[in-house]
Amino acid sequence: KALHLPFLVITGNLTAEVAVDLIRDGADDFILKTELERLGPTVENTLKRYVIEKERNKMEIALRESEELYRLLIETINDAVIMIDDQSKILFANPAISEVFGWSQEELNGQSLFMLIPKELYPSHRAAVQAFVATGIRKMKSWKLVELPGVHKNGNIVPLEISLASFKKDGKLRFLAVLRDISKRKKADVALREHLQLLQFQVDEFSQARKSLDSITRK
Image 1 (cartoon, rainbow, N blue to C red):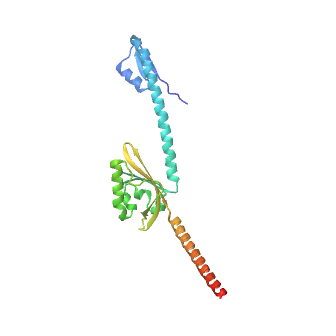
Image 2 (cartoon, rainbow, N blue to C red):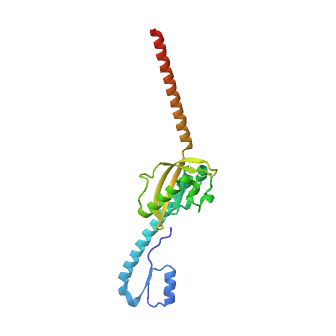
Image 3 (cartoon, rainbow, N blue to C red):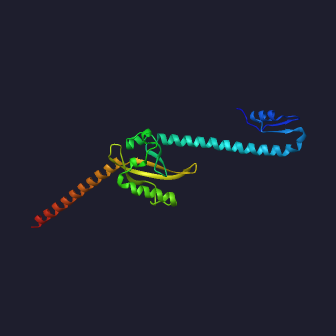
């Protein structure tokens, strides 16, 4: 594995053209033999730059690895993920978006988030975004597991469970939403309520029948 180490050139005679070539070819600095008093400070500065550059490279590698990990997670997660700007423009959508809304990534990228929001929620969405951009204060106390409706490509309403986050990228505000279609859960909840209501009705009917039977028996 090649090592990148600080490299200084000490020479007795150096033209400007040669100096440029040396720096371009990888030399960190050069010193003329007539200026050896510069050797100590030059070595110190060069080592400082080397340490800073080494740490910067490590941070860039760690950042790339982190970004790749997050990209893989978002690309493979079953929930839909959308990133928008402060104008509600969709900047990114993961593949799972098509399972929830029927639109592909390509169809949504660059479009307005209002494509996925019921019209009656337009004003409240605009107000919430504008208020947060202006003050940094959330209109909702929690941005986690919020239940809101969405609109499918076919026009059907989709019940959603949404978790939101805000962050800045390159100095610009971004919003990230993780959306889960909870249609099956809602249907199961309705079925459970109906079943419980039926059981309660049967219990009431049984209780009434028992009272009637007890009344007849006492006579």
